[in-house]
Image (cartoon, rainbow, N blue to C red):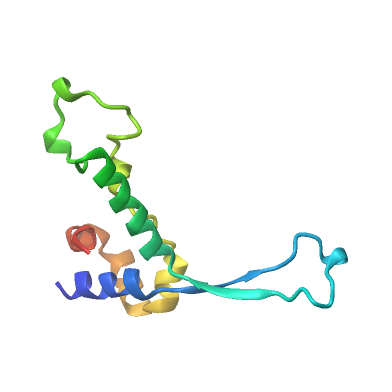
Length: 115
């Protein structure tokens, strides 16, 4: 359960600073400055996932596969409910959690899915 709580905290809290630079540095005026913004990549993925699931009206569950309700393959793939996590991000945020997951992924997978 502690793994679920810590992984959920990572998904909600992890952020990156992104620099927006002009497309061509040679044309950069003195007035044009590089702007930085903070993004939360995993929170944004979760929001997009929720929107897709609401739009389709259901979530993917392998147990619920039936031939009566055939949908587009992209709508009913196992990855339609997956958030892609960069291991380096997790390791930089919480090295102990990252190493525990790496060492015993099979044991912790259900908790990660719930997070």
